Image (cartoon, rainbow, N blue to C red; front, side, top):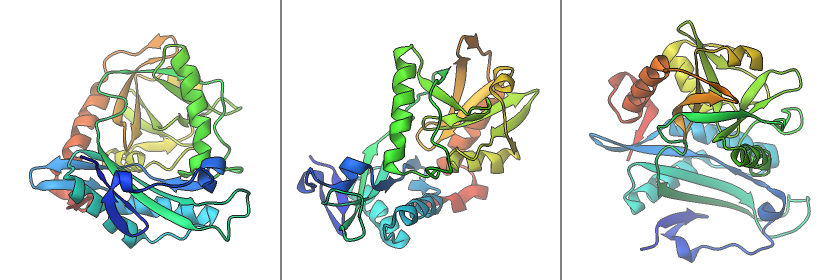
Length: 285
């Protein structure tokens, strides 16, 4: 049976929706997306930090001139999850420009789409093999670090190059040797039991990153590649990746990750509704 999706105020089977090949977003990347997670809990299912995701998506839409109604898309997300009877799921809302070639988009029709699929962490529970990438991250002065569709070609190239070398993820640094982020995750390190969130103006303002900082009081600052290489532990955060332990950075293998694993267990408990203190982060459906 086809999964249900939502597009332009209509909920229906996925195979009833289509767009033409001249859609502007396909040719120029003129769209904005989010990655959002829902989780099974003892009391049904819940979306984690839905409002924060919608606020970030609204920011992206404003950058490229797309009208975005947070309430409408929020309700559409819940409707799709209910229709698909999803609990542990990945949710993908997408706003984009429709038919019409060229960069003058003001007169083009705008579309909004929501889908959900069953999901687990895309990095899995195994330790990540991380490679320093020869590519640079998009500069924030050229493309703001939001979830703009076209910007992610940068991530694709770095991930492809790292994968060809036998690694599972790529790490961006800037011209000065400061760590930026990975292709789809923010970076943290642990040294002498202290957790540090890597901060860089070219990095996405991650919602899982913010969550970890709020939970741990982690220091947020610039970190050089040399300092990262001396860390006791490295972990990555992202909506899909959750909290993923790094087992190798280039040729250096890292040892046990007790801080990371303790934090990961706490995080998974929160998203599954096991912490009354953090109930406001959940939107139940």
